[in-house]
Image (cartoon, rainbow, N blue to C red; front, side, top):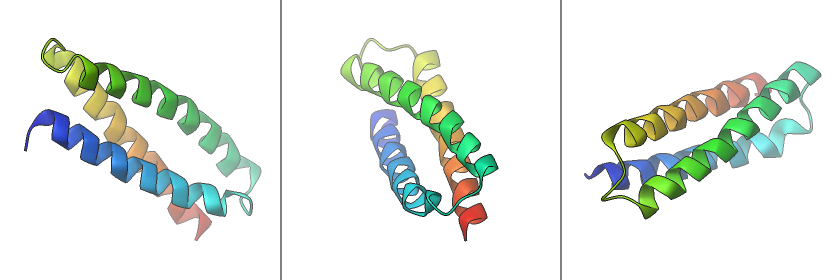
Length: 87
């Protein structure tokens, strides 16, 4: 699987976790809502980086691709943690 395919798959998984957590967020406490707000800022950064890397896939540096993948993995973990707290 190419890095671009891996990043797209990662983005879909992060989006799924994000959507599930958002549904349950209305029941959450303030601490979880603050954590959510931080993740949302990182989500915007991730989507911008991902769009840039996918658009410039041939010219994007390996470092940019790895940075995007790391940010996506961190987001996935963050949204998973929120989902666990909301259950």
